[in-house]
Image (cartoon, rainbow, N blue to C red):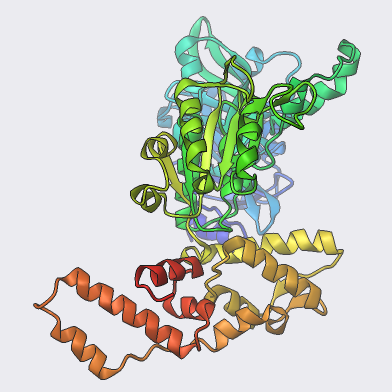
Length: 589
């Protein structure tokens, strides 16, 4: 029986661990006792597997300082072990048994089998400062080839994966949802980087990186996570502020500071489309270009705007939100650009700082940008071009440094063509476009979002809802959610108010979801209408025929659902706003 099968029979999952028959391999349980071993034990240590099963690994060979690393769950490669005066090298990878820690897999090889540059633990320990604590620090170590040769689980936890998945990989390929590691750069420069911000798993962290020398020669680099969330630094600074400085009187400038509420981890989505979108977000967030967020109402455009700010170099600056549709036209200029005292009747004494000045050094989020009046579009364009604002009633300009993230749920291309939106402003805003897909195009995410909402509402309602029954799940998955995530949240909140017990049933869901799921009719087009369309082939352009067919489908769907536009949109598989656009296009209002 092979070693992998022996381990499986013992209840251990080796995962992706490569089993080499040229090394001595053992699986250890949670007490570091040998659970199974291959036959190479006889060649390397002179004992057969049956002689060592049940013994602790430290009783069979002398591990020295490596024993501590194994107990602490470090994952490492190519560490020295001496047998009868001969130097060997060993690897260790912790394993899981179900959901519980269950020791790991230990392999021992001869020196000539080593195929990668190694960094021995004593060299790392000598380079670490006296304040370092291997039991607490989140550590990673790479060799001169950039290969991860040691990592502990606390570091991997920051990335949301297991240490086993990272060991042996190049460091540039091991970090999911993160900025590239700077450890290779630290080896190039030979300079340590202390307490630097770095994006790991979509969250801003604080890390330190150090080159590793031996006898004056570079042999690798190591790093550790100081703070898993950069906001911990702000909280610590606030805690000690009273001890290092006296309070300063409040000024108008202090009122501009706004923290972002969400980061990339707040975006729930495991579908292929959302994974690709989050990767794109992280890639462009650190660059200075303006971004236009496109998506239907309720898709979470503001959430994405927060995440862009959180992942950018402006994360320390303010995040200021402006809803261009919610501010009356006559107040919009003063809200955006501010005003001086006496600028108009009712102006505040001392004037007011505008949103753009509040966002100086940070990000301004212009929601519903399509509703901005034309006269304000011209003034906004000047601000974006000149990077300066002029408060209402003042002749003095103020330089500003802001990044603009704008959002809209309408087709700005059409508004530009219709002359309702300035072309020059459109291209200033639409440097990079992120299109957020509607929920019906990423139905796989409905499950994960719903689970998250259940947790939220359980806390708010003080309930213990655990799940939805199968019929309720099917209704949610088959419904198109024209209101997207906002509508899904509304549906789950409705169900929490109706549910009895710990499971949400189909009858607990809103009536319109149940009706749309159960009574969606099939479209039936009259035969003579089909024949008429077919007869048009060769007589009319294809585009014209397709438009006639689309118009016919819309008319037929409305007839079959009694004129209910929401149900007609569900029948056609489009959103209600999309249906209204087509009704306008074909003069069917």
